[in-house]
Image 1 (cartoon, rainbow, N blue to C red):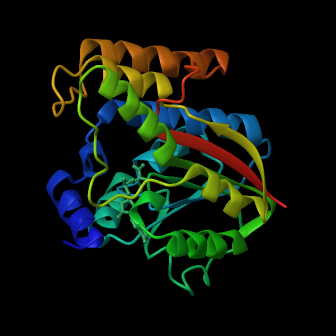
Image 2 (cartoon, rainbow, N blue to C red):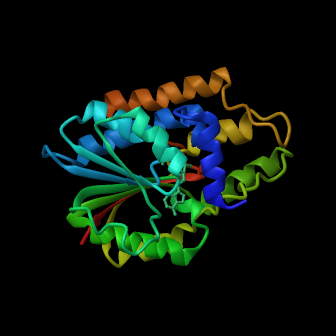
Length: 263
Ligand SMILES: C[S@@+](CC[C@H](N)C(=O)[O-])C[C@H]1O[C@@H](n2cnc3c(N)ncnc32)[C@H](O)[C@@H]1O
């Protein structure tokens, strides 16, 4: 099955729900808290323009619009079904169907102050396509604008499997429709046109609990355990109230946050 068909079917089934884009509802709370935290930290003026690439059914943008109502938000996704439900989710955000690897996708847009991706580049499954989509998007990013990535990386995933193996759990495989990024290669790609400001393995503590400590067998993951809920509450609480990202020193999370600034 083609990736696009997969996402269309998922949106058709789960409509406006978080389930359309992830199996793990709680991680969305953390991702949205991280985005809000970054917006407060870096975006000091009003009336800024924000773009999400691969916005799915628009949940990130809907939550951000509630908090930053003066900003203009635009979301692009190649799944017609995702965009259909994104439009139902909000009338104050512009949503468009489009493939982020396409050449003339951005012709109609004026420039943005911040562009972000959240578990979207992993779907492209090719270094060349990732390179192309970043190159295209950076042309609609203002000078000194921010490019933010919340993506999955092989490095943390490998470490996570190392820990699972010590506890006699089998390796977790990456889903067929994803290819996790290589951190070193990705940072080299970015460094040509961007200054990297932050690189955080933000899910290290979360993934240690979810994928290493709580599973009783190799295949079953409990995305909704009481412990997991408590941990997400702690993580989001510290971010929201203390602007502090609770982290674990061992790089065991499969998700990194990379913030960079266009040179
Ligand atoms: C895991 S979902 C994440 C959705 C959203 N970013 C979020 O965090 O809720 C990945 C999304 O990327 C979209 N996507 C994948 N490849 C794409 C492409 N080449 N162009 C545009 N969107 C794409 C999929 O349709 C899907 O909605």
